[in-house]
Amino acid sequence: MLMKLVRIGTVYNLRRWVPLDLRKILRKNEMWHSLETPDIEVAKIRACAIFGLTSQFFSIVRNTLSKSYLYDETVKIAESYPDNALIKDIIETYEAHIKELKIQYKLAEAEHFMQRMEDYQRYKKVDDIINASKPQLDAVLSYMKEHKDFNAYNSIQQMQQQFMDIQGWVKPPEKKKSPIFSVAVDEYLKSHSEKMNDSDTRGFRNTAQRFIEVCSDKDIRDYTGEDSGYFKEMMEKMPENYGKSSKDVRTVQELVAYCQKSKLPRISEKTIKNHFARLSAIWRYYLLRELVDRNIFVGWKFDAKPKIKRIRWNNEQLQVLASAQWNSTTISRKTYGYVVGLGSYCGMRLEEICRIRTEDIQEIRGITCILIRDHIARKNRPWEQWTPKTEAGERVVPIGNALINAGFLDFVNNIKSYYLFNELKFSGKDKKRSDGFQQSFSRFKLRNGIPRGVDFHSFRHNVSTKLRNISDSGDGGLREVWIDSFLGHEGQNKSVGNTVYLDEIDVENLKKVADAVVYPEFWNIERIIK
Image 1 (cartoon, rainbow, N blue to C red):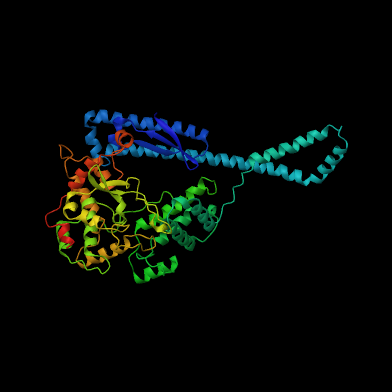
Image 2 (cartoon, rainbow, N blue to C red):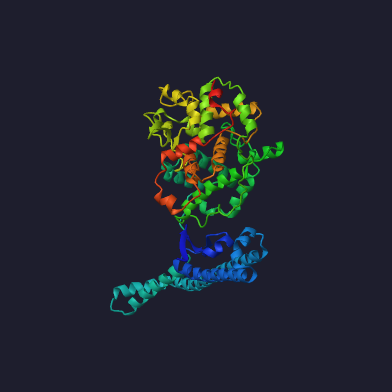
């Protein structure tokens, strides 16, 4: 199959596969073009035209390669793209032709609409004449009802029906009444309540509140791209610490004025992108119901790079951490040591570690493992319900020898409570067990000179880096899919073998991964907990 029509929202799109011999050159497996119409028949006609242009484009690229280079040097060309001027010029010409073709579509639609408006205006003149003569026509019809044998009666009735039919096809259809934005948000959240947690719901409501403050509350069909652009401009002027305090009730306008006056740092593009993603989801929901004409929150560009790049711990920082005195009054040194040990050797996320229940530690074929899985809340404890971050996050994590030698299994066997780390409590808006530890650990590392960007999650970077630097050949090698499964990553290898036929990875192979995480001698968990 060379191409496929795909409907996204109300608009059809052309999906065209790139030939295998050109994928290295163009660095694409497929090409997508919006056909800008909800009509399947119109979409087919436009798809054929774009298909022809794309085929011609592929042919030109092949001819250029065969004339200018040895064909087996395509890899070198691919490596130089997009700096290769010849290929770049061909692509720009192709994109210009596609753009010109789409402009022709819009002109044709505009001409069609103008023609319909002219038809409607002509009809309106006739309709006005008929309305002016309506009293006389009604009198004639009244006479004809009493004299059914008068043949003109049926003829005039048919004429009236014909005028009604004409009005039906020349008069633009009336659009459905759309709800005001605040009501639309409530309905959207109600329809998605089973898929959202409290944090998601609060995020949507916060975004909606800010959008109303900037663009007012009106029918969602009445918002335009100008509104979304203005909202983006205002959010870009917000202070960096916006939303950190629940007691801060200042509006967007007040916060922007305060930020400009005090010359404070601005919020990140990633935060603004999150606002747009939520609003786009709402608009997409109503676009499918034909209550908005288009999604005004798509197509915007954001620099989503975090202001502070998260990096792994280096040996000097680990030495500081290993020798520093943990002095929290609420979390013991043993809990601190084993939480850090699980992070640094297993690469587990902090919330995954803090939520470990004693029942989650089980022996599988002689290997002690931690099962990261869905949690069902106990009676009258709804906050205990929990799901791993992603589908891949639900996994089996064998305990490596480094933790076993540090006495971790003895620690586990002595715990009689429901949760392994019973000193940790649920707290914060999202009722997380990791909040208290996160705050204590953050203060601890900053007090000891560890910079921002190196935090608890950085241990995952350490584990991933160490494992992926091990050769995947020989008896001691580690396969990429084992590492992804151990860390709970989705994985980059999307082959049929991995996605369809690989049901699970043997726990023995995962144990090899766990034992392959090795640190310098100074990083000793047993020494840290004492």
